[in-house]
Length: 122
Image 1 (cartoon, rainbow, N blue to C red):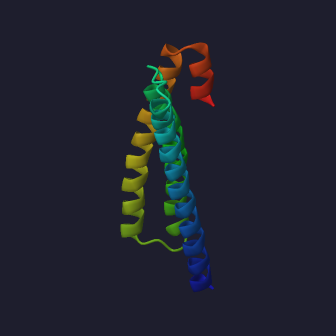
Image 2 (image 1 turned 45 degrees about the horizontal axis):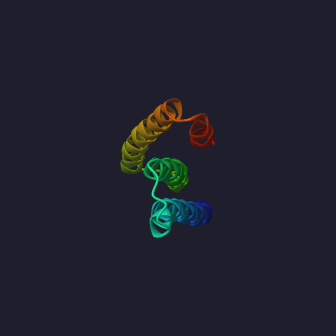
C-alpha cells in the first residue's frame, strides 16, 4: 500500500514541478515580449523594463510556490531524516526568495503610478 502511495505522490510531485516550470517559462516569455516588442516598434518607454520585471517576479513567486508544494508531496510518504532535512533547507531557501520578491513587488507598487500599483498587486 505504501509503495502505491509513493508512486502516486511521485506522479503528483512531477506534475506540480512541470506546472512550475511552465509558469516560469510563461513569465519569461511575457517579460521578454514586454521588453522587445516596444523596441521593435521604436516605442521604447522608461517603464517597460520595470513592468517586465514586475510581471516576471509574479510568475516566479507562483512557480516557487508550486515547486515547494512538489517537494512537500514528494516527502509526505514515509520520509527519512535526510528527506526531511533537504525539505527544510529547500523550504527555507524558497521562503526567503518569496519574501524578498514579495517585498520588492510591494515596494514597486508603492513607488509606482496607481496603474502600476494595481498591476503589481494582482
